[in-house]
Length: 150
Image 1 (cartoon, rainbow, N blue to C red):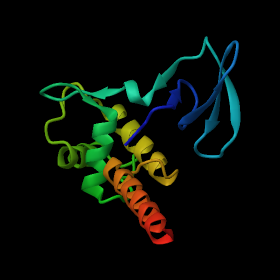
Image 2 (cartoon, rainbow, N blue to C red):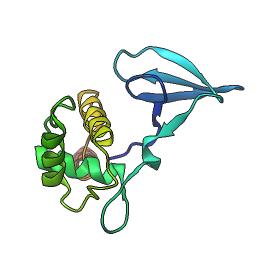
Image 3 (cartoon, rainbow, N blue to C red):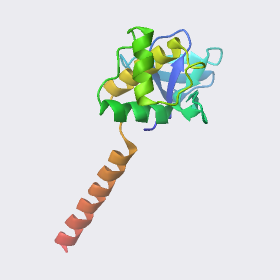
Image 4 (cartoon, rainbow, N blue to C red):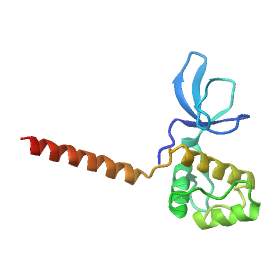
């Protein structure tokens, strides 16, 4: 999974995709409604590719966490982020058993599952292996077509 170019803006709901850069900031597009808006340098922005989740070992990048949730749910939506904290923690325990229960707060889990579901519905959560297989299959088909033309 590649979360490059996907950001969260403090004080604004949802996630945004970076569209272009301007003199005073960036232009982003909402993943929920597709509206574009400018973001100035004074607004707090977090790139999803820079976020990590605390584990008992080394901190795990958000991409890997989302990958584990994707595997656990078999590509379906995760738990509703509005569920009780106990259910959120149980779901996270099933997906990522070694996450640090003391340093990962309930609000972090709500945001994680909300982001996961939003990215899944936007079609941005695709396994890298699937992308590689599709590329190899497309190259193979092109090679076969070229061989048949000769």
